[in-house]
Length: 111
Length: 114
Image (cartoon, rainbow over all chains, first blue to last red; front, side):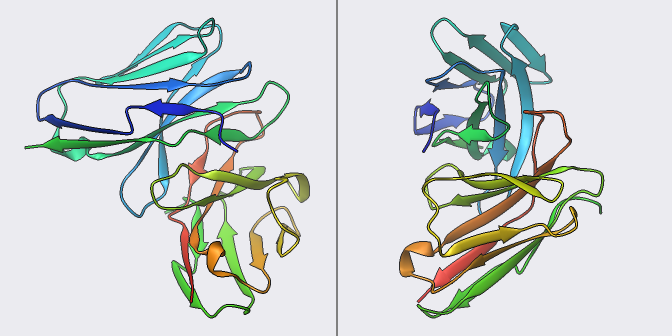
């Protein structure tokens, strides 16, 4: 089963534009993470935001978390063609150790 | 390279055959996870270990699937009597013992059941 739902499912932008992806989840969490996956490869961790944090930055990435709405967003600024990949949010369950992934947003950045 | 290693990278098998995949996690990582991913979907949780103990197994996982981590190091995932619906990418990940810490993924094993 999947807890997170990403929106949009697919996003196509031009190089230099910003990309925003949203994630909604259902249960209380300890933290929310974002991962990136290039076609046919494993996932790579991008950023983790804890339930008591509202915003976090890492390079060109900005993540927000709204626990009252059970939602998060990932902003990639000044996108590059190399950012083309699928992006997944993942949440833990307060009582468990596993991560539950959403269905992902497929980002295409055109040069 | 001391990342998560998965073997084989690709496996083609006929329906009804058994297959086994191997995962070697990052050496100091106590937790090891197995996920399954089909095209266009996110990874689906299968099971995870803390050291050699299997702590949770997905209710969606049929009895044909079994995983082991005998000495708390590498892990194997076996699928018996494979079906076409088992075709997917099988991903292994590892993490430190802190709950909900970030996962390090291997490149996966792509299974095709003919």
